[in-house]
Image (cartoon, rainbow, N blue to C red; front, side, top):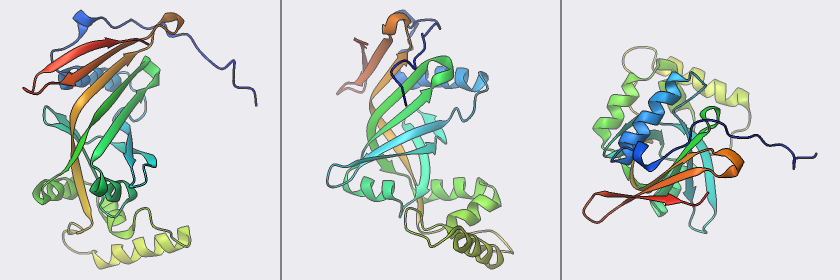
Length: 212
């Protein structure tokens, strides 16, 4: 398979310092809104990178569920690989690859567990089938077959046929508190525009232009 010649030129508008918002979250919200308006699939999908106790990184795609000046929120099974790794090391990296508009955002920070009340509020807002799936899946653990998984799902459907489905005690969420956020805009001749917001001790943000 020949891959060396697979490439494209980036032709969208560049990114300049005077175009940036004062805070990275404000800049992210602007770009996210534009990604949603562009109507491509899964604009809130992000690659979540964690590291285990041996220094081995792992990644997976998760959906962003909320963002504000406090941070970036997602939810997960607390028995999952990512949750177990975050117990050992809460350093985390989020990557939003918006290829269609020639942009990407990389968030560096620390994952802080959300209070149960907030997790429960979101859990109860999910479609019933998604709530049942959360109960049925022992995330990241081996399962003998798809059939076995669906049998567990069916049993949970019967178990919770009436009334409200309770929050599993193995389901939680995190707020990623950012320390650095990079904004990348594709540029001609591979001379991309990159800006890094770096959080200062007083809570303000310093903006640096990076070499492509």
